[in-house]
Image 1: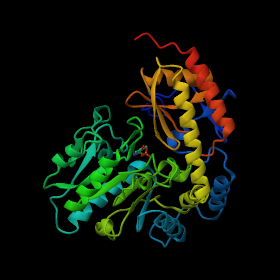
Image 2: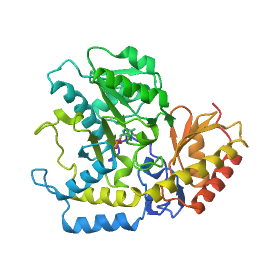
Image 3: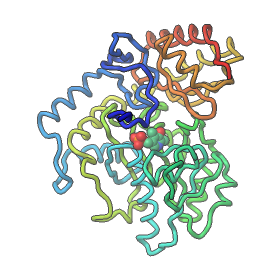
Length: 395
Ligand SMILES: *Cc1c(COP(=O)(O)O)cnc(C)c1O
């Protein structure tokens, strides 16, 4: 037998973390890494946040899981918190981002089909998007590397270039139910939707009674310096998928929607055994207690600006490697002139700095939101050393 017990779907590297301390990971050999990947935008509070640990420990000792057959004071409390913090009137809790997007897709379809418009099922989505790895969410993305071996895809998605409002308009037809878009593409390379594009989608949705669905799984929950990025974009969606950061490391996601958008989501239409269980609710509440705070958010913006300014100065020293800096708050990307993956590996293996490669030749910089001056200085020490010592592999 040559298959590994862990299904070999990830090309895992040799770093094998066993412990986390604030913004660092420590591996089996005791090597310390500066973690500017944060579990891919998950560990907002770093790795050993007392509030989060305490909340999970207390809830685990009190009540971990009950079925959604019963009333949920814990779920009601976190849902109310999200309703208060967003445009939404109602929340469905999931265990992951893909499930949050699944629920958003179902909600958008049901909005029309609940009213008898069964022909409206198609979502217009955008090239190089990432919405997750379930059948529906891979079908929602045009990325062929995620499709290969898994056909047939789910029908009902049409792909248009990101930031191409005219293209989105031209793709509309009698089957269109709405638009599904990451307002900032994460996996696709920290590409921000232009104001014109996002506002234009809102207008098209309003004029044609379509659903505007934002996937804020990566850019949401304080990452960009506001609770959700739609606030900065000045565009309010009808439905939004949330996950990654909201559990701070505990598996938790949410699909939030306005009352109108959720009109099709009635008794029996959707469900999840684990979704919204008391343990997950405790984790989500602890994360929101920490980040849903004006001072915390202002600090994220301020640290993001400082990191960005220093990055912009820094990359000027290495025009052969770097082209520009992108993103908002602490969701940053460095556009490179070369493939970012070998450089990311070099930073990791030779300088103990963790970052994440993304599409469009971009290196993602996604630190925990609790970084301070010391971590920012350490980041630049490692990045400078890494850039100075880098030799691109022969291609
Ligand atoms: C990570 C991600 C997802 C999928 O989340 P999972 O928890 O891995 O299922 C969906 N959308 C976006 C924008 C993401 O970044």
